[in-house]
Structures are given as structure tokens and as C-alpha cells.
Length: 323
Ligand code: 2P0
Image (cartoon, rainbow, N blue to C red; front, side):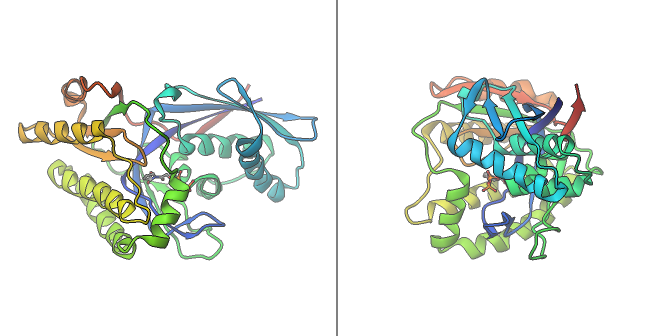
């Protein structure tokens, strides 16, 4: 049995739009921090059966979830010629009821686990490209710390891979205000397609991502938290504005989201170095140096719809061990 571990990541410069939906190629780059607290552990066991099996958090899966994972394993079987089926058991080490379950940690763990189980020898960049075919954000979770995803230019997607930004030493922790799960809104994959197809702001968004990527890397390297706040919050709000401008408009914010945004900005006005970002959901993720983590956690606690406030240091890249 092969035990693979990967952590989800939160983007400081967001991925929202594809240049090729079949190969899952992003239309622009992105930049993220891998987070230790959002960890997935996936056991991959070669089986003598005629089909793959999947158990998620103890629940046997069939239908779409199994088909998606099985199609992903097929990518590796096609490359190795090894037709062995796999028994896959995956569990998230964070509260899944919180609605933080992430395809990033899931497909990064699956990529390294399935590659090892089927004997595919692959470089980290090749594993990143493989993970991307499962889910775009998973390409970044192959690596730990700060990670840059490249849109690439090649039609086959071989250059649409992530790379670690190992020279960035800025210590940042995440404080995640987990908002009570409301009615399920549109998922990321459909949401970004709808945005590309119908938002009048889409081209401006894609152009802005390149500007934000260069500025974000520069601000991270020079440890300029004030500039980082402007770039990261601006990029997040531009992504959401673009999604809101789709038809029909996509609104991921809930009242608790706006409350948490205000708390973060209030803290900053009082001199605390902190800034926020928000993914395709209601949860606000604040980034702050470790010394301010407790202050930010306290400030984000107390809204009736904020179910819990998690904190996390940066996480490591995806790993696999034989047991
Ligand atoms: C990101 N998100 O950069 C952005 C910000 C959500 C909001 O990457 O279709 O689940 O599987 O490639 O990776 C979520 O998108 O989409 C995402 P697919 P994915 O983190």
C-alpha cells in the first residue's frame, strides 16, 4: 500500500478561467501558499479487481466521484501500460463539515500515490502537470510553501505546471474564518466557465492577473506587507467582481464574509499587518506574520455564522511512502 499526503493551498493571485477545458489548462498563472492544516491522506493499493474503488472519509463512493478518480488513474495507466486497478481510500484531516474539502489536496495526493502505485517515474513538474489534469489548483499542491503556477503556451499542456518559489522567506500564517455552510453555490469548474463565457470583465481580469503576479512576487521578496495587502485583496475582489458580472451572476459571499473582511481591514487600520483572500465560497482566509496570528484569530471569532477559526503555518509538498 502507498500512503500519499498532500495539503491544500490558498491562492494569493487567483486562478479563474481556462484556456483549454479538456486538458484543464489555465488561461493565466496563479500564486499560492500551501497550508499545513488542510491535509489529505490517500492510501492507494493495487488490486486484483476489475474496477477501481474509492472510499472518501469512510464512505464508499460510486457515480461521479469514482468516475472522476478512475479517469484520473486511466491517465497514468495509459502512460505506463500497467492496467492494474486500484483501491483508493482518502480522508481529509480537517473538518470536512466545514465545507473546506478541497480538490487541490485530493488530486495532488492522488497524483503522487497513483504514479507510485503504477510505477510511473515522473519529475515534480510532471507530477504537477498530472495533478492539474485532475484539478487546476492541485498542480500547485505538489509543492510546499509559496508556489507559482504557469499558464504555459504549449497546446498539450506540458508547460502548464507549478514551481516552488523557494527563495521567498516571508513567514506568513493563515487564519481561516470558516463560515457556516449555506446553500451550495456553483462549483469552481462551472463557475469559471460561466464567467469566461458571459462576464464582460473577463478579458480585463486575465490581463490583470499577469500584472498582479509580477507585483505579488516582488512584494513577497521585499517582505512588503502593505503592498501585498493591496495586491492580494485587489486580486481576490477582482476575481469575485468578475464572477458576479457573469450572467447569471455568481455570488460566493455571505453576510459573515463581509463581516470578516471588515474585521481584517479594521485590524490593519490599527497597525496589525494582515490581509485577506476568499476562494469560491464564503470563507475568509487572512494572512499574517506568526506573531499576530492569535490577534487575528480573536478578531475573526464571534460572528454567529462563523463556525470556527482555524490557523495554519505553511505546508509541505505532496509526499508518498510505502507501508
Ligand atoms: C484558486 N480556485 O486559484 C482559485 C480561486 C477557486 C477560487 O483554483 O476546474 O477546483 O478543477 O481546475 O482547481 C478552484 O478551482 O478548478 C480554484 P478545476 P479548481 O485557488
